[in-house]
Structure formats: structure tokens, C-alpha cells
Image (cartoon, rainbow, N blue to C red; front, side, top):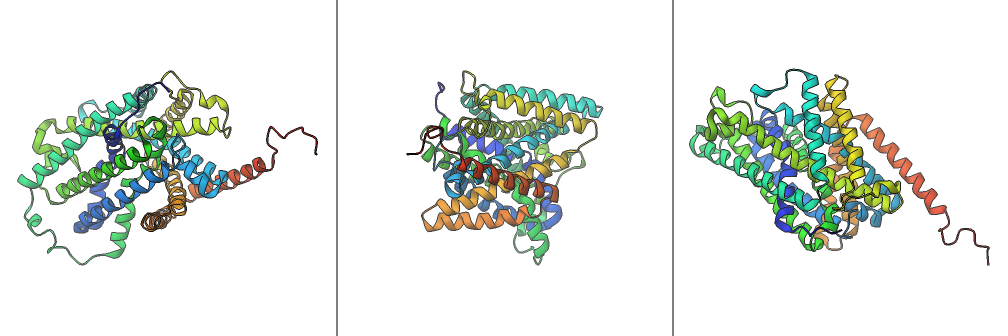
Length: 426
């Protein structure tokens, strides 16, 4: 690979934008609707959970530095069959999720330029999809520069809007944040925490960039923890601004209201740019990591060798091309009314959670010091609890993948090594 290595700060910024993603736009209003005044404490717990999740996956993914990431740690802990299952679940998530991300970008365009029909909406999302795929083929260093710009811009806008809202447009109840909390409703709080878990999905792929990062054993965990802290602070600020701010009717719904004190009537346009920045960064990090994982498996002969074909930047462009075709097909199905965004997200989330479960279980087995092992074990239990809430078709698909990868791994283990094939017994 002939490109220069990426350092801590650019990688940190890419992670910030990717993990914030569209969740920072969608989740805060939903949490307030479900948990009411307890939404902000729930975000606080989620922020702590996010730091632990980022640390566990960054460290597990760099135990064996390379493009395999956490999948290589899963193989060392449980064998090649489970490694292949972890890789398949992550590849499945990346097969569905990005299509929903592209459609979200179009849905948050200002009203003046919103597509007038589902067909035009699909064509616009497809255009953004192709542009993002082309950007992926330029390599991690170019991606990190773009990701840094997008993540820094989004973070500044969200923090600024939240601070101005709390300082100048807060309601009277904000002066009694703790003393006015009503008795906790355990079912509502539990559902809110499960809902907010989606805000930390994305840390599973940070280890897959190990081959393109300077000193990955130090750089990746450091960048992940720094990014998780920033993501937690931004999430808390946004949640507080929405919960305790007062907004005029023209401010718009949800997070868009936080930008109204800063930009007035231009807030919808700024919000559109903000959503695009976050969603594009999510796409770049997730699909870029999964493409490297697929190429890594092809190099290990677990997949066809053609999938390890790379361009001059060392990017597996054949894999990116195949994923792009799949995403365009899903966007077309949504445009035709055969699928909806919620259905796509549900499928992707189930696969992401299955991958996260295998990764945290592997970390709990491989870590040698008590505290990291305990944290990884507790995370595995939390992820399993959320995974059980996935739709039954997704759970069925994951079980079938598990059976297939287990059988194939056993068949491969029974085959003689190439160097021994055809030799007469001694």
C-alpha cells in the first residue's frame, strides 16, 4: 500500500461523524417522548456505555492489527467458523444500512427542494450513493480529510446551537433539572435505554482500518475513546437543548430547532447540510471498513479471490462496486414501494447487533486483565438483551448463517493441507 498512514486526530474525527450519524437527529426527540424528564439521565448512561463500547471494540480489533479487525479477534477466541459468522453479520448490515442512510439525506432536504415524487427521491439518493462510493475509492487518507471537515463542522453546529438555546432560550424548568424529576418509570426508562443503544452502534468497525493507521495498537483505541467522549458530550448537549429549550413554531421539528437561534430562516438549509455531513461520514467509515474486511477474507481464501482486487490506493474497489449495486437496488425498491426505510434499518440493526455480540464475547475471552474482561462481559449481556428484540426473520437469518458457517468451517478443517494432498502414506 503506497499511501501514508492516518493518525489519531483524523481517525478520531471520522469516528465522531460516523457514530453521531443520523441517530443524533432521530433519537433525541424519541427519547424525550418516551422517557420525558428522564431522557437526559438516560443519555448520560448511554454516553458512559458508548465510551466502554468504543474502547472494547478498538482494543479487540487491534489485538491482531490488519483489515480483519474484530473478526480476527473472534477467530482467535472461537475459531474460523465463528469468525466467518461475525464477518457475514457485519457484511449483511452494510448491505442494507447504507441505503437507508442515503434516503435519510434526501428526506432532510429543505422543503423548497424536496423531491416531488418517490421516483425523484430515489434518483437523488442514488446520485448521492454513487458520489460516496467514488469517494471511497480514493483511499483512507482522502476519506479522513473529508471526514474531519464534516465531523468538525457538525460538532461545532450542534454544540453551538445547544449552548445558545440553553443560555438564551431555556424554559423555567431548566433551573431545577434534578429536583423536578418525577418518580422513575422503570419500563419507560428501560425502553429508552434500549432505544438509545442505537446511538453507539458503529464502533464494531474501527479495528478494520488497522493496516492503514500509524501504530494501530495505540492510535485506534486512543482515537476511539476520544471520539466516544466527544460523541457523548454532543449527545448530552443536544438532548438538554431539546428538553429544556423553548422554540417558536417556525423553528421546525426536533434538532432543527437548535439551529433556529443561530440561523433563523436559514436553519432548514443548515440542517440539511448537517444531516448530509453526518450521514456521508457514517457511510464512508462503515462501508470502507466492511469492504476491507471482505477483501481480507478473500485473501484468506474464505471468499473468491476477485474480491481482493484493489486500485492504486489499495482500496478493494470491486467490493465497493458490488455494494453500490446492492444499495442502488434497495433504493429502487423503496422508490417503488416494495420496501420502506424502517424495514431496511430493522434488518441492518439486527445484523449489527449480532456482530457486536460476537465481538464483545471474544473480547471478554481474550482480554487478560480483570477490568476490561468485566466490561466486555457486561457489554455482551447488554447487546444480547437488545438483539432479542430484533424481528424474527432477522434472527432466523442469523441462526442460518451460523449453521452454514459452522458446517463449512468443519468441512474445511477435514480437508488435507495443499502440501499434503496427493502424498503417499509413509
